[in-house]
Image (cartoon, rainbow, N blue to C red; front, top):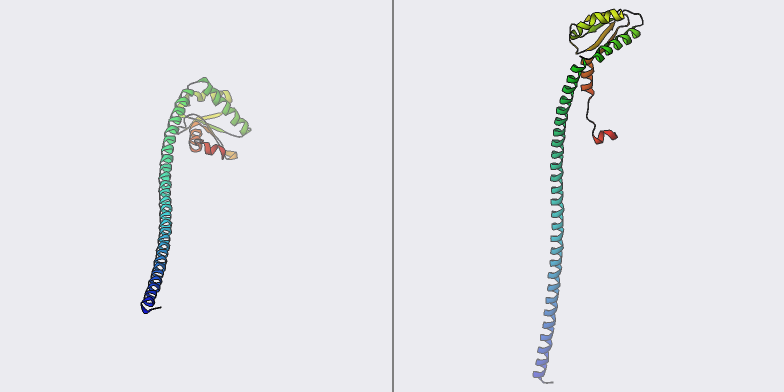
Length: 196
Protein backbone atom coordinates (compact mmCIF):
# COMPACT_ATOMS: atom_id res chain seq x y z
CA UNK A 1 0.00 0.00 0.00
CA UNK A 2 1.33 3.35 -0.98
CA UNK A 3 1.61 6.35 1.22
CA UNK A 4 -1.25 8.04 -0.61
CA UNK A 5 -3.42 5.03 -0.11
CA UNK A 6 -2.44 4.85 3.52
CA UNK A 7 -3.26 8.53 3.94
CA UNK A 8 -6.63 8.07 2.22
CA UNK A 9 -7.35 5.03 4.37
CA UNK A 10 -6.30 6.97 7.51
CA UNK A 11 -8.39 9.95 6.40
CA UNK A 12 -11.38 7.70 5.69
CA UNK A 13 -11.00 5.93 9.06
CA UNK A 14 -10.56 9.27 10.88
CA UNK A 15 -13.52 10.88 9.15
CA UNK A 16 -15.68 7.77 9.72
CA UNK A 17 -14.65 7.69 13.38
CA UNK A 18 -15.30 11.43 13.74
CA UNK A 19 -18.67 11.09 12.07
CA UNK A 20 -19.56 8.11 14.29
CA UNK A 21 -18.47 10.02 17.40
CA UNK A 22 -20.33 13.13 16.26
CA UNK A 23 -23.44 11.03 15.58
CA UNK A 24 -23.08 9.43 19.02
CA UNK A 25 -22.59 12.85 20.69
CA UNK A 26 -25.57 14.25 18.77
CA UNK A 27 -27.69 11.22 19.72
CA UNK A 28 -26.64 11.48 23.40
CA UNK A 29 -27.30 15.23 23.38
CA UNK A 30 -30.68 14.68 21.72
CA UNK A 31 -31.57 11.96 24.29
CA UNK A 32 -30.50 14.27 27.14
CA UNK A 33 -32.61 17.11 25.71
CA UNK A 34 -35.61 14.82 25.26
CA UNK A 35 -35.19 13.54 28.84
CA UNK A 36 -34.93 17.12 30.14
CA UNK A 37 -37.99 18.06 28.06
CA UNK A 38 -40.01 15.10 29.41
CA UNK A 39 -38.97 15.97 32.99
CA UNK A 40 -39.89 19.61 32.40
CA UNK A 41 -43.19 18.55 30.81
CA UNK A 42 -44.00 16.20 33.73
CA UNK A 43 -43.07 18.93 36.23
CA UNK A 44 -45.25 21.45 34.38
CA UNK A 45 -48.18 18.98 34.36
CA UNK A 46 -47.66 18.32 38.09
CA UNK A 47 -47.63 22.06 38.83
CA UNK A 48 -50.68 22.57 36.64
CA UNK A 49 -52.59 19.77 38.42
CA UNK A 50 -51.56 21.22 41.79
CA UNK A 51 -52.70 24.71 40.72
CA UNK A 52 -56.00 23.28 39.47
CA UNK A 53 -56.47 21.37 42.75
CA UNK A 54 -55.59 24.43 44.86
CA UNK A 55 -57.87 26.65 42.78
CA UNK A 56 -60.68 24.06 43.00
CA UNK A 57 -60.27 23.90 46.78
CA UNK A 58 -60.28 27.70 46.94
CA UNK A 59 -63.44 27.87 44.84
CA UNK A 60 -65.05 25.17 46.98
CA UNK A 61 -64.13 27.01 50.21
CA UNK A 62 -65.49 30.26 48.78
CA UNK A 63 -68.66 28.45 47.69
CA UNK A 64 -69.05 26.90 51.16
CA UNK A 65 -68.50 30.32 52.73
CA UNK A 66 -71.14 31.90 50.48
CA UNK A 67 -73.49 28.99 51.18
CA UNK A 68 -72.98 29.44 54.94
CA UNK A 69 -73.67 33.16 54.69
CA UNK A 70 -76.79 32.49 52.62
CA UNK A 71 -77.88 29.82 55.12
CA UNK A 72 -77.42 32.22 58.06
CA UNK A 73 -79.31 34.96 56.21
CA UNK A 74 -82.10 32.52 55.39
CA UNK A 75 -82.33 31.38 59.02
CA UNK A 76 -82.49 35.02 60.15
CA UNK A 77 -85.20 35.73 57.60
CA UNK A 78 -87.16 32.64 58.65
CA UNK A 79 -86.73 33.55 62.32
CA UNK A 80 -87.97 37.09 61.68
CA UNK A 81 -90.96 35.80 59.69
CA UNK A 82 -91.75 33.27 62.44
CA UNK A 83 -91.69 36.07 65.03
CA UNK A 84 -94.07 38.12 62.88
CA UNK A 85 -96.39 35.13 62.48
CA UNK A 86 -96.19 34.37 66.20
CA UNK A 87 -97.08 37.99 67.03
CA UNK A 88 -100.00 37.87 64.59
CA UNK A 89 -101.16 34.56 66.05
CA UNK A 90 -101.18 35.88 69.61
CA UNK A 91 -102.92 39.12 68.57
CA UNK A 92 -105.61 36.98 66.96
CA UNK A 93 -105.74 34.77 70.06
CA UNK A 94 -106.26 37.82 72.28
CA UNK A 95 -109.03 39.04 69.97
CA UNK A 96 -110.76 35.66 70.15
CA UNK A 97 -110.28 35.65 73.92
CA UNK A 98 -111.89 39.11 74.18
CA UNK A 99 -114.89 37.74 72.26
CA UNK A 100 -114.96 34.61 74.45
CA UNK A 101 -115.09 36.74 77.63
CA UNK A 102 -118.50 38.02 76.47
CA UNK A 103 -120.06 34.54 76.08
CA UNK A 104 -121.97 32.33 78.52
CA UNK A 105 -119.22 29.74 78.01
CA UNK A 106 -116.82 32.07 79.87
CA UNK A 107 -119.20 32.24 82.83
CA UNK A 108 -119.42 28.42 82.77
CA UNK A 109 -115.61 28.25 82.78
CA UNK A 110 -115.44 30.51 85.86
CA UNK A 111 -118.00 28.29 87.61
CA UNK A 112 -115.97 25.17 86.77
CA UNK A 113 -112.64 26.65 87.93
CA UNK A 114 -114.17 27.84 91.22
CA UNK A 115 -115.66 24.37 91.84
CA UNK A 116 -112.32 22.66 91.11
CA UNK A 117 -110.43 25.07 93.39
CA UNK A 118 -112.97 24.53 96.21
CA UNK A 119 -112.58 20.76 95.79
CA UNK A 120 -108.81 21.15 95.94
CA UNK A 121 -109.01 23.36 99.06
CA UNK A 122 -111.08 20.61 100.70
CA UNK A 123 -112.76 22.89 103.23
CA UNK A 124 -109.67 25.04 103.86
CA UNK A 125 -110.11 28.84 103.64
CA UNK A 126 -109.71 29.99 100.06
CA UNK A 127 -109.91 33.47 98.57
CA UNK A 128 -110.71 33.94 94.89
CA UNK A 129 -109.73 36.90 92.74
CA UNK A 130 -111.40 37.92 89.51
CA UNK A 131 -110.19 40.38 86.92
CA UNK A 132 -111.49 43.95 87.45
CA UNK A 133 -113.40 43.58 84.17
CA UNK A 134 -115.36 40.67 85.75
CA UNK A 135 -116.50 42.66 88.79
CA UNK A 136 -120.11 42.31 87.67
CA UNK A 137 -119.90 38.52 88.05
CA UNK A 138 -118.59 38.48 91.64
CA UNK A 139 -121.89 38.68 93.52
CA UNK A 140 -123.56 35.90 91.55
CA UNK A 141 -120.53 33.56 91.77
CA UNK A 142 -120.08 34.30 95.50
CA UNK A 143 -123.69 33.46 96.28
CA UNK A 144 -123.71 30.39 94.06
CA UNK A 145 -120.57 28.87 95.60
CA UNK A 146 -120.58 30.50 99.03
CA UNK A 147 -117.00 31.60 98.35
CA UNK A 148 -114.93 34.67 99.20
CA UNK A 149 -114.47 36.30 95.78
CA UNK A 150 -112.74 39.68 95.43
CA UNK A 151 -111.67 42.00 92.65
CA UNK A 152 -107.96 41.70 91.88
CA UNK A 153 -105.99 44.94 92.15
CA UNK A 154 -104.29 44.05 88.83
CA UNK A 155 -105.83 42.99 85.56
CA UNK A 156 -105.08 39.47 84.36
CA UNK A 157 -107.38 39.44 81.31
CA UNK A 158 -109.82 36.88 82.76
CA UNK A 159 -110.01 33.53 84.48
CA UNK A 160 -109.43 33.18 88.21
CA UNK A 161 -106.69 33.36 90.77
CA UNK A 162 -107.10 31.83 94.20
CA UNK A 163 -105.03 31.74 97.36
CA UNK A 164 -105.14 28.99 100.00
CA UNK A 165 -103.04 30.49 102.85
CA UNK A 166 -102.98 27.36 105.06
CA UNK A 167 -101.55 25.24 102.25
CA UNK A 168 -99.38 28.11 100.94
CA UNK A 169 -100.89 27.58 97.48
CA UNK A 170 -101.61 30.02 94.67
CA UNK A 171 -103.91 28.76 91.95
CA UNK A 172 -103.37 30.82 88.82
CA UNK A 173 -105.85 30.04 86.07
CA UNK A 174 -105.67 33.54 84.66
CA UNK A 175 -105.65 34.01 80.91
CA UNK A 176 -102.73 36.42 81.19
CA UNK A 177 -100.52 33.72 82.73
CA UNK A 178 -101.71 31.11 80.24
CA UNK A 179 -100.97 33.41 77.30
CA UNK A 180 -97.52 34.30 78.68
CA UNK A 181 -96.70 30.59 79.14
CA UNK A 182 -97.96 29.83 75.63
CA UNK A 183 -95.80 32.64 74.17
CA UNK A 184 -92.72 31.41 76.04
CA UNK A 185 -93.22 27.77 75.05
CA UNK A 186 -94.36 28.44 71.49
CA UNK A 187 -92.13 27.37 68.62
CA UNK A 188 -92.70 26.49 65.01
CA UNK A 189 -92.12 22.86 64.13
CA UNK A 190 -89.86 22.38 61.16
CA UNK A 191 -89.14 19.18 59.29
CA UNK A 192 -85.93 18.68 61.26
CA UNK A 193 -87.52 19.29 64.67
CA UNK A 194 -90.32 16.75 64.03
CA UNK A 195 -87.77 13.96 63.77
CA UNK A 196 -85.77 14.99 66.83
